[in-house]
Image 1 (cartoon, one colour):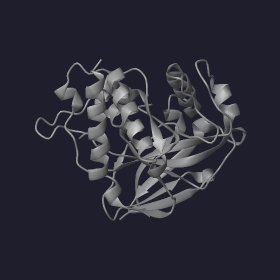
Image 2 (cartoon, rainbow, N blue to C red; image 1 turned 45 degrees about the vertical axis):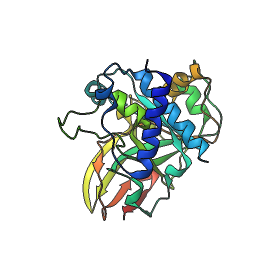
Image 3 (cartoon, rainbow, N blue to C red; image 1 turned 180 degrees about the vertical axis):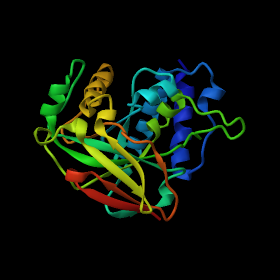
Image 4 (cartoon, rainbow, N blue to C red; image 1 turned 90 degrees about the horizontal axis):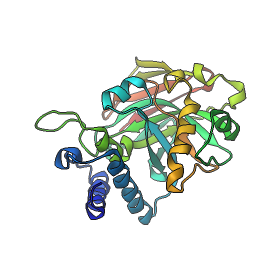
Length: 267
């Protein structure tokens, strides 16, 4: 494990990088002994800085939910991070590019919890029972730690991604709502278009076979830290499309069929 003072220093660098929109070099290159636990320790210290500045946690995100992404990252489970209140943007609105460094767009489902979920033995059925609604959602991922090293072009390691809020930077929850009894979540699908061109399509079954499985995993994963998922939390279950790059002027539409559609634009 990295020393606690170093962990705090790296968290401060990430906190400052988010504000200044200045990318950092790979922590894993500077500290090759870094582990997944170090990544989460840095993330938790960064959360403390956000909370101290007046931010609040509105939920959690789950990432790396596809088998292909896990294999590429050389891990065998997803990752996670909190959703801070200033990461939420309204559907059918303009998103200031100044809020991001290198934004990319992913298609997801959000679980809106009506009851708390406390591990360590939360099941899929308990997730469904605790869910008030599911909603279409977009995650905007970013890279305060550069995705590719500026000199070697080596891809960052999962330790870097985890420390970097698991790449989370923004979330849009669409207006559509459904109860879990009204829809087979595995077959919830979406079409993501950019500037009028279909870029990605996918089904929520791509998220661990069933998106609620990831929510149960998360509740159990955070339990050893004395944490739980709370009533009112928004939980992003993981992307079921590849990320799509976004630049100033790009307009996106996410069409979820029966769950509705919404648009947004980077300005």
